[in-house]
Every structure is written in C-alpha cells, then in structure tokens.
Image 1 (tube, rainbow, N blue to C red):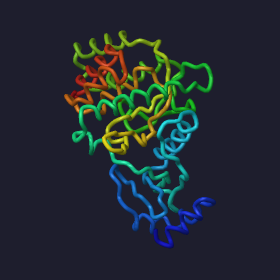
Image 2: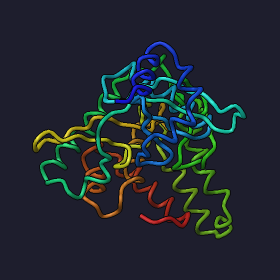
Image 3: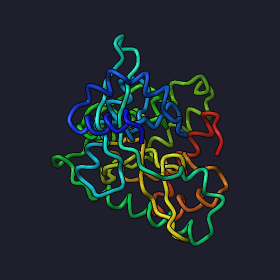
Length: 286
C-alpha cells in the first residue's frame, strides 16, 4: 500500500471530504471492475458512477437490507455528486470476490448446487424482514416510488396501495401498445388481467438477483457467496415477484434457469407463465 492510499484509508475512517475532493484522481488511478462504471480506489473502497436517482435508491436500500439482515451485503459509505450535479458517486466497501457470471460454467455440479442453496437461503432471510407496519402497499422499502426494469422502463413508478393497483399498472404497460388494436390480442390481455391474483403476501424483494450481481469466493473446493450487490430495485413486492425477476434475468435453457424456475423459489408457476406470455406478446423472447 502506497503512502497516499494509507493516508486516505486512515482519514476515511473519520471523514469523506478527502475522497470527495480527490475522486477524479482516485478514479484515474483506480482499477476498473466488471459490471459497468465501477472502480476499486486506492483506499480500498469501490466507487460506482451513475445518476443520482439510481444511486440514491441503491444507497438507501443497501443500508436498509444491511440493518435488517445478516446477509452478505457491502457497506455503503458515501453518496455525493460532481460540482455540476451531472454525475453521482456511490462509495462502497470492497469485497474480494469474483462475479458468479464469470465462474458459473467452470463450477462442478456440487458447487452449483451449493450456490443455489445459498441463494434460496438469502431469499428466505430477506422475506423474514418485517414490514414497517401492517401493510398491503407495493413500493420502495420506504413505501415510495420504486424502480423495476421488468415493467415501467427506467423511470420510477408507484407506490400502489394494494396488489390490484399494481396489477392494473402492470397490464397497462401492454394494453397501451399498438398491438392491442388486434382484437385477439386485446381479448387475451383482458383475460390475463382477470387471471392475476391480488392476494399474494407482500415481501421484501431484491428484484435483481442474477449471476452478475452475486460475488463468490473459493476456499478449497467450497464456493461461498460473499456479496449480493445492486439493490436499486429492492422493495416490497408480491411474493412471486422475486421468482419472476430470477426467471427474467436467467439465460433460457441454462441449469441456472431451470433451478430458479423449479426450486430456488418454489411455486408461482401460473404467475410465471403469465409473465412469459406477456413478454412474448410484447415481442420478447424466453
């Protein structure tokens, strides 16, 4: 460790100011990490660069999940913007590990099974988080608007007072499209809408568990999840939603896809089938 890195790490225990002042220099001297605009800095932290809206949600949701679980989640230290407010910087703990996407095909069958069990346990622990009050609303962890890239695009939407309102919004993303001018399509969407249950449990949901957002470490032949990252889509969702997002984020036909459809989150086959049909109507692939 160089002298500057040592000083920054020491001062960083008490103040974020030096890192903020030197952020451009630290990024230039940093190491690019997989997964977008993410750099390991000299002081042993990680910076994620993006828009304030996205990173604010990730900052707050990560803190919330760390506070209410013992899951492997990196600490978040700071969030600030550039002088012109055009770019935001999220400072996080660096967790040594490798992106599961890069290691998955090299794992043995027993190692893959171990990872799947660990993911199942992570989801179970997330669902043990008690809501801030008895509620049926669907939204961010605070009950506000939330992000979800499966529906609603890149803009936040909601919150919704109940699952019926959520279903109405979900289906509206399809009924507003030009293909609804076809009578048979319009009728099928109306049928799917009627089939949507409105009485699922509302549970805390990561909303983006995939091979890119899981970091793993190896000890001999054992493989362990050391971090689950990218919490900007987290919040309160119907109980089937985590599985829907797992299926959405999995490569079709892979062993990971088979696992998320069958036993990592069990049940909800009808909900998943409706979601796949909606994507096919919209012109997607599964």
